[in-house]
Every structure is written in structure tokens, then in C-alpha cells.
Image (cartoon, rainbow, N blue to C red; front, side, top):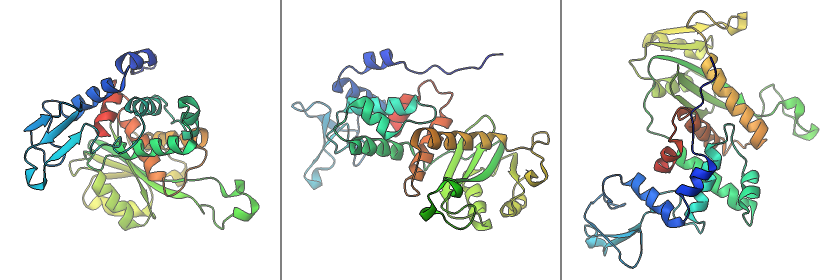
Length: 297
């Protein structure tokens, strides 16, 4: 049986769908307001189009504040920038069609921006828009795990080496539903309170089984959930349905993306990269992943 690929929008399809900035704005309008345009400030549906300014509306309910005029870009990551919306869309398209990510330097080369800083800014704004703080809690069989992201100490320059095997690395906790979605967050440590709190935020109370490794921080899960674990320290990785191979696969995507595309990611901005990989993973079977990204942004 061959690998099943989910077809996505091709480059010719993208160019045909978005020939101008106005076409991009119309697309954005229909994704933001599928039924009817409403005020970006108060949600009022009684808005009047501004005849002299396409894709601008006037809200009548905000009259106590002197009226409120807004555009289709208000409240999105595209607001208050001098970059054309078509350019924004092309950057998002490139980011979504690169399975392991695409660096801002590569975006800079391909798009011909005047500076690398512009590409870096656009990519980070998009990643911030893709983050989903109001995710649906995971159900079914859920695997939980944590990993360290960062270069090996032995590969650092002599004056940048740090004591300890995990020095300079950043912790990320993750939970994934078998054949479903993943939730991943940067965390400060792997103590019981931190990991227990993450699992309870990410996993539904109706979950059928939580699978982890033998880390002691997960010991309290059995008080509320059906919990099983594999003993990696003893060389055991699979025991029927009890394994963490799905979440390990997600960690592999992140680490290969950072090593192959980004090369280096700072602790400060790692949560944005994690959000990008989480979004791509959760929409891996969605042929309308671009539409989903525009609606999120």
C-alpha cells in the first residue's frame, strides 16, 4: 500500500487565485466573515461600506466614540504593515508547503525583500497568528512526553560550553492523540506540578488512555486517568497499544526542521516555532490548510 498524500494548492493555483491585492482582501473578508461583515471592535452587523475606500466599513454602534472605521486587515497579523497582502499570502503559502519549515533567510532570497529583517518579521508574525490557545482537548489514546531542544554541548565552541548534559537546551512538553492532533508547549522544568498541569490542560477528562514513559512526574495521572507507561530505561518501547512512537515522530519533525532549515532557534522565540509545527501537524490531512491559516491569522 502506497503512502497517501493530501493534495494542497499548487503554485499555478495560488497565482490564479491571488492575482492582485484586492483578490487577497476579498478572500480574507470571506474567511473572517463568512456570512456578513461585522464590526471588528464590537461585533455589530450594522456596518456601512465606505464608498471611497474598498474593503473599509463604518460602524454605527460605535457612535458614542465618534464612530469607528475599520478595514478588512484590522485585528489580523497583516494590520499596520507596509507589506502588500499578496506578499503576506505568498509567505504563508511557502511556510505551509514546507514540511520541515522554511527559514526567514530563504524567504528573503525567494521574495526579494530589501532586508532580512523584513522576512524575519513576517515569519514571526505568521507563527504568532497560527498559535491556538483555545484548542480542543485531546481524547482517545493520548501519548504524553517531553523533550529537550538545542544543540549538543560537545558541539559548542570551547568558550560557550556549559556544565551538564542538557545545559543550554529548552524543554518542550507534548501530548498527541493517536491519528489526531498534537498540543505542544515550552515549559520551564519537568517537575510533577509542571507536567501534571500541562497534561490536565491538554487532555480531556473523557480520554480512554494516557501513555507516557516511566518519568516520575506522571505518577499522579493515575488518580484521574487510565494511565500506562513504557519502560524505556529497560529497552522496552512497545507493549501492544502502550508506546510513545506518535509523539516521538512529532519531536522528530521539530528537531529535523530546526537542524535542517533554521539551524538555530533562541529560547525566546522557540514557542513560535513550536506553534508553527503544531499547526502544520494538526492540518496535515487538511487540503484547505492555507484557508485554515488565513482564518487563524
